Amino acid sequence: MLALPFLPSYLAAKESVSKPDKKLVIVYIPNGLVRRCFIPGEEEKKSPGFVTVKNSEKKRQLDEKTAEGIYPLELTSTMEPLAGHAGDISLITGLDRPYKLGGDAHEQGASCYLSSVSPEEAKRKKLKFLQGRTLDHVIGEKVGGAGSLKTLEISCNGFRAPKESPRFDNISWYGIDKMAPSIKDPRNLYDRLFSGSRYQRHLDEVSSLVIDDARSLSKNLGYHDRDVLDEYMTMIRDIEVRMKRLQKLIAESPIKRPADEVIPRGEYIRLQADLMLTALQAGITNVSTFMIGPERWNAPMLYEGVFERPVVHHNMSHNQKGEGYKKLQQIDLFHMEQFAYILSKMKSMKEVDGSSLLDNSVVTCGVGLGDGATHQYFDLPLILAGGAQGQLKHGVHVQCQNGTPISNAWLSVAQLMGLELGHFSDSTGTLNLRT
Image (cartoon, rainbow, N blue to C red):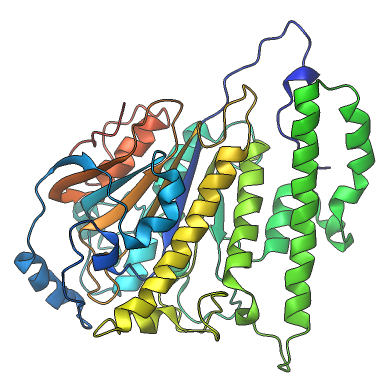
């Protein structure tokens, strides 16, 4: 069994085509960003050294504040990979995430990023973390659609060994201390989405069972739908070929026990992204979270085309003095390239009414730490993309009043997705994002 995208010509001739469902994609980038290369107007700032959370709070009081307002979008050096999508994105700055002293900054950065627990509720319930039901589950419960999965959780952390607490590698929680585990292995993700039954795991290529039926179906479809079906089946087959290639890379590794870090990061991330986007197009789910990497996780990863050998992202984030920030920026650029790939793919994927997947989606890309070196949980940048079916305006930089809760952004996203929600976590209102 293989889920297919919606094909209008397969309906009765008189049956009207319904409007596509809205989709939500939340992309998370670990270990912060090189602020001076990412946020407009900060290029002249000095690179920070390592700073603890408490010292970060002192630094916050000394920082100059950008005036609140809406400005034309300026693509800084780290945002250059998104130049082809300048009209599809907006940048939001000045957002703060609640932080509770006594917990690791990276751990809270991920696990509390989308939390619905306010600091007051955490104090009342004596919770160690500000961690509870996350935005994706709140939205998925209402607009998950008729698909088999109300939410989909994906991580691009290739390491199987539990080097850190699960809170470093998950941003999705359906309740307090109730984690929705992210899927790391492309084969497991593929089986979850398309295989239907566990017994099919022994098959090398699930699509080989349905390709003949797909050809037969194609004869009964309109010209446009035949193209859609052919493109879809080609994508599925391509995903399978790429999964085999990654497995071959690991199997042929010269070390005795193949380690996951030999997997090229870009190829791995794009494969996971294609699986996610195919699930959205097929209507398997309407809501997905996507971690480009885990927080901290002091283990080497191979950023192909960037560094000759595997490097440790977390360690580099604490070495920004001198020319150190330039090497770290290469990882930020790498991550922006992967995000640009996701947007480009969404723009090319057509929905039932001829609009694109991106037209019907709300897509966010952000961090749980404003800067990895300072461990700051405040002034978090957030990229917003997608059309939300004509509701969003783009090409702007929205500078919020510094200290604006990031839950204001999440409340705005929930309303864009059609929820009649008046409050979320510690929100104080919504953001001016609409057309």
